[in-house]
Length: 76
Length: 201
Image (tube, rainbow over all chains, first blue to last red):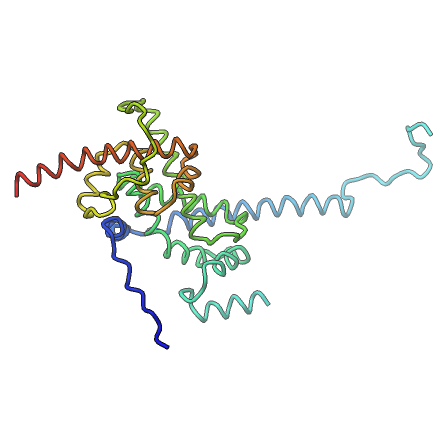
């Protein structure tokens, strides 16, 4: 059984204009690379900050040892 | 395991990778090579779209950088429900239309035509579809910003009226009106240009 072959779509003036415009592009990835590096740097700062907070809360750094005899201020 | 996948993909080269794989690998590794490959694939198309919409080479070049920076900021929230290209072109269209709106606001509402019957917007004979790139460029160069955007979305992107309405943030009826007016203005521009051409021929 022979397959029906579709004729290729005729390119309209709009398609040709799009191609002409695309060909004018002069790619420059450097500014985007810079943005990626900035994001990476900010991301690592946030990560550092979060791990510092987690560290402080996990190891109770800087907190006084609680006095077992101290009574709670809350009414029972 | 991710590291071995990363190395295997590097050995294969990026050109064989799907867009979705590049997005995933970028999110995992934050390696600029993955995003660079997406940029290589899509920046000419984004530039082509921007220059057609904005009609200014310098602005189009800046727009490409801005759009890819936006993509970079939002890529973490890209859920891959749609294709990367579709998502990117939605961002591109939004960016260009916002910019055109700002320009229009700066210039004021000049040259709006009175409302006319909108029923025959889509049914009219499609003379604009069959024009040469030279004629289309002349028409687009001489149309107002939002008329140009509407026609580009319709003829270059082959969007439906409904899709154009979503993209331009308009009601469907307002979009039909916009398209009808844009086509009327385009016809006037074309007729003047064409009669000049005939006179010289």
